[in-house]
Image (cartoon, rainbow, N blue to C red; front, top):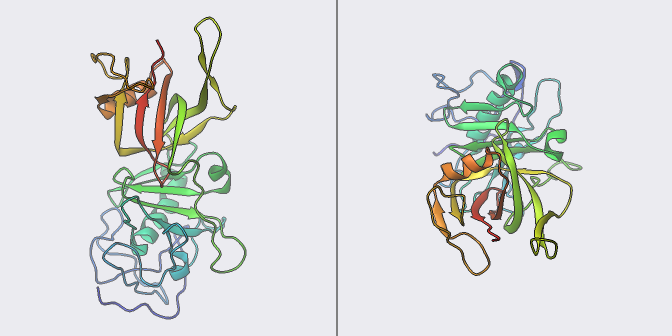
Amino acid sequence: MGFTALKSMKLVMVGGAVAATALLSACSGNNVDGNGSAAKGISGAAAVKQNPQGGSAGAAATSNGDVNCSELGGQVGPAGGKQMDLIAVQSANGSIPGCTEAFNVMTKYYELAPTQGEGPGHRVLGIEGHWDCALGAEEEFTQGVVNCGKDGGAEFMIKTAPTRGGAGQSAAPTRRFPNTTQTVQFTGFDRSVNMAQFQLVTWKKGGPDNGQFVPSDAKTYRLPVSKTAQVFGAAELCPGGEVALDPQGRGTNPCAEQALMEALTGSNPLHAEIHVDQNDNIDVVKELYRP
């Protein structure tokens, strides 16, 4: 873009939310909810130079490749509430949202959440026409961590994170099961935060059926399902499909994502092996079958 970041930056409160300071006043595409222009008239507002990959020049990447946008433009949070770092999350393919867009989106979320947020997560849809934001689950919920995904969250994601200690020591975004494979029993779908609910389970031999799935712990977890998730049925997940298994009893019959959503919202629990990508999104689901 050819813009140079100013040395000094300020962050002011506007309309009950933290207004973004990292703005590209001459660039289009970063307006919020179709507004004619990005925020104006902010004293000391800085222009942020964005690189072609979507990250922002001058912001330090964390050890996992995420970018702490607050090093450029200050912290974010509700008016009079807890202020947190704004993190641009690196996706599996290396894409990172620009800090300009991240500040715009998060500012709009804090503006709309008190009056338009849905459910306990204060979920807000359609920010800038593409983004979906909501408070996280479990510890993230109590911390006030906000997660946002663009067009389903498979490629571009941002979130807030508590700050540790002094300047430049922001906490890494909390992730439950990145880059792991888990055996689970799905227990539903939480539409308030757009996440699949599940318990961790393990196979216990013995009993009248020669074994059964039992919980590994008493917790219920929630993770988003990637919009590009691969779903494989064994016997019941894919309507009209024949039993199709690998030697470990995992489904091999490709299913549409709609079949998974119907199973998550149905009355029969679904046992599955899931793979979780580095951003804590479920990207592979394989139904488990025990005759």
